[in-house]
Length: 430
Ligand SMILES: *Cc1c(COP(=O)(O)O)cnc(C)c1O
Image (cartoon, rainbow, N blue to C red; front, side, top):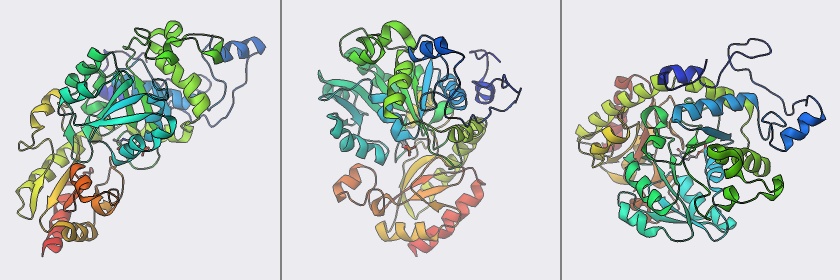
């Protein structure tokens, strides 16, 4: 089928990027389990290596199974292209790599996935990059943090761990005014709940490990390009606007126009950083995406029921779910994620640290894991696990205080999820 805006989300999540296999007619996307591809002749090989013709050379760069997934995610996000890679963290590096040089910085939200905070505050320093963390509820503070060396703004749509919603158009306007791209991690919303490009994002990154695959089987990541940023408008992005020595002085922005970022991601990023997705992982994720809208509707419906029940329960102090009227982010749901506020939130339990530990150990349906976006319900007590190295003040600031647990609500029967929480809360607070 030809992909187009005429098709609805439910159709595109099954068909986008997937045509019957030209060699066999196979209806499902085959797993092209191959490292290399035979060139038609020497001229064909030369054209491929010069980027004069698009095709398959070697699976570190391109592979048809991964290509189908890239096209599907790009279509669902409303982007012009996408590059898949080995994990969500790889996607973040792949998104920043073409924009950054030693001495450059990004302005990032204080509310991010814990691993992203570590990647941005520690590891990227080895590349000479740095991050300034700002409260993204305050767009003026974001604007004030941008300096001459800033090359990107980074936030999450529905932010970890509390399910806070970012006012994307406001933040995108700050980026536009400064000539800086906005990168949005859309992992916990998925393109079904929010399409950040429609709100002004330049790039969208995903951990496909989570809801897109949907059942906790494979790690993967993706960078989607809106195709809307003019990389040659100023001299801030020389990797995209200036001659590339490794390709005979070709300029990506001039040669590939709106696809410059995507081509750079494959021809330089995957070629030299090598954070490639494998075809088997792409297959699992393609299967997962076929049911994305059905699962997300159920995740949201269950999260709403569970959060409402928890908020009314006298054994809890508060619940941070943005889908509750008590949330300061409730007013943003209709604007940013009209189909629902996702399924990730935190709960403060009466009885503090000890009660949280007992709660986690007493649950039967919930799994105590450092993951989110699985079909099954998950819980983590951040203060004793992912955030245990932090000081008490840092834990509070991160929404990971000792008396708080984070829930990722699955697609089981809501009544069973609630009953499990009920029995475990009874043990935890007795
Ligand atoms: C899990 C996650 C990541 C990191 O993805 P991996 O696939 O684990 O590398 C980044 N951002 C968010 C919001 C995540 O949930």
